[in-house]
Length: 391
Image (cartoon, rainbow, N blue to C red; front, side, top):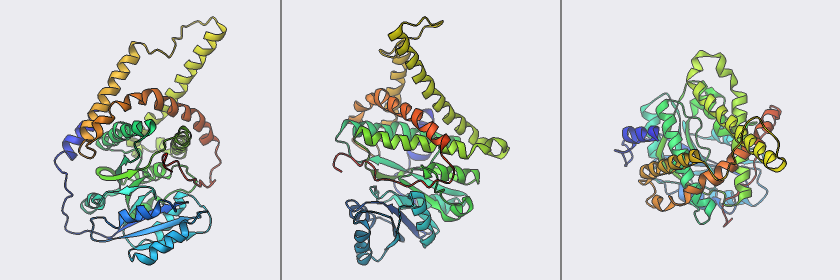
């Protein structure tokens, strides 16, 4: 909460119109696609309406099994600024982004999901960072939830604001952002080249490329006014699959980049690493205590210590709930500039600790051994995600 408020007061509250810069460099917007025939037309239509003087759109069809390739070909024939790359087999999002980056014409690239909608001024907000600050290697945007009809969708409105938004603001104040957003992020191509692009064997290519850039001492920034509207899972199955991937990707990054501890120059990444390890440790301890309590309640085992039931919460739980409400309130106040209807979702986010903490902590239990036992070099391919009840 404190970090978010400091960021808002220093870097966000005064400027709500894109800054004017002397030059507007060419941008390449990379959109990797896998089975996107139902969505890609709408996404491109939104991109064609951006308020920016010079940009191209590169659509990468990553071995789609539906009619995506034909739809993309139709779009390319109609729109001069749209180009396409066709990959015969599903190689994964990281490989698609790398190919798209290599064929792009611009020094700066913005990557976004094929089921997202970019704000008209997004490129103007990120261009300023790159033009004014040569050491900026990436700028992560601000994903906002578009589908809000179900309970899961409404809760995620609060999550993206209160958890993801505040964390990124605070990490930016502290100097190291854990990850750029996989939904929308912009990169300096020279930075990507020096870091070795995206690794194709990582489940979450966004976390991995962030760490590679920061280990190479590029500056990573968060721009909350670079808004991108996204479709989120609205079924428990879809949510579970998404959070398993996030959790596994986080552990894979810890495994891949443990060598930061042998380099004093990487000391600013140490707190981020420790925080992530602590969250994994917490998940295992929480469910371990729940398991011990359950066994004791059923079999009446005489233990040398007392384990209290997890439900109902004790006074410590009440304090935690109060802190959650305060955190939600702070984030709503900050984000109301970008989403005027945020206040009405304050009621729904109170379910976050009861639902999402449980789901997220369980996914850590399942994903951690998968990540630790995964063979290095196995390509991470993707499947079409859950994009809400309408899909």
